[in-house]
Image 1 (cartoon, rainbow, N blue to C red):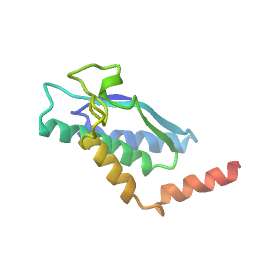
Image 2 (cartoon, rainbow, N blue to C red):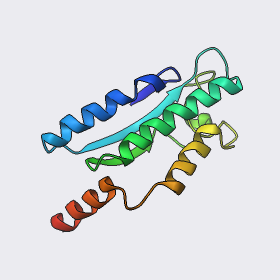
Image 3 (cartoon, helix red, strand yellow):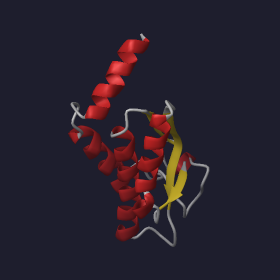
Length: 128
């Protein structure tokens, strides 16, 4: 899933599709996720990038059929999209960007008793 910093307002569509997939019994994996920039990396654009990472991860966490969320690399130094795209949560020097902190805070504060977590755990127990 390759997006850009203007995708944030469209993330609700992902949740709608996850609902459709769940009704069909389809599991979802978000892989190769990155969020490229446009026209330079101002604080506002870094915040937009963080917002997209946060919202997509949040959708995944709230859907029991979303089993995986993976970025497309470790940092901007080793990404397939070179500067100025800089699509990953860490910069070329491996320093955390706003996207890193947004995802970390979401994961840190996410309710482990959320219905999606319970459903995911029940399904895994049944599959074991």
